[in-house]
Every structure is written in structure tokens, then in C-alpha cells.
Image (tube, rainbow, N blue to C red; front, side, top):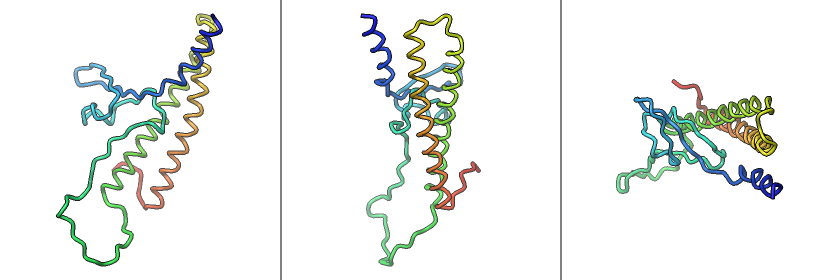
Length: 165
């Protein structure tokens, strides 16, 4: 029975793929939601992503589709243009989110390592669960670093500066 419990505890973090957003409002109340759209706009930049897998993190993208009937086609061949202000802002936002996720995961790894330093007051199963979570976070950091690097390359190719203005 104990072996079954240990196995279940080790597999439990693998099933937890939900993303939760945390933010603190003006009155100091800590709020949580699973949908970034539920976070008020003025708190979105400061919202922390909890339990995020990089590939599954939803992002809010403001729609910039033209209204039907308002487009003008000149008939000339379309040339590749430099990215507009909206594309630059979207790339900067995506880069900022990826970098924030990377920093949050690195911080979580630091906290897990600190907890693993003193094992005198934890059970064996808790210790094994922490080790498993640490390994998963280390893999996530690798993926997140790749994404940050890809976004940097994409910005360089598009001639976009990722520094906030």
C-alpha cells in the first residue's frame, strides 16, 4: 500500500498542467484565476504565472484584423515591410512573458533546492516528490531558454529592439 502511495505521489506532478495566474490588487488582496483574460488589464504585467508549462501558457493577443469592407487593394504586388508598431509590441510582449516565465521557473528551482537542503523534517515521499518536481522544472528551464533565444533571433531578423521604450 505504501509503495502505491509513493508511486502516485511521484506521478501526481506529471498530471498537474494547469496554469494559474496570481496578482495583488490595490487593496492588497491576492487573487487567483486560470484565465489571463480574467486578470484586470492594469495587473496583467505584474501577474505571476504559477504551474505553467511553456507550451500550454495561454496568451491574450489583441485582434488587429481589418474590418470587412474597409480594406483597400491597390492591385500592386505586396512587398515585405518592416514590422509595424503592433507587431513590434506583440514581439516585445511575447519576449517579456517568456523571460518572466523563465525567471519564475529559475526562482522556483532555487526555492526547491533550498527546501531539499534540510530533509530532517520531511518524509521520504515528500523528499522524492520535491526531487521529481525539481527535475521537471530543470527541463522546463531548458525549453524556456530555447524559446527566449528563438524570440531574440526572430527580433533580430525583424530589426526589432526588445528593450522597452
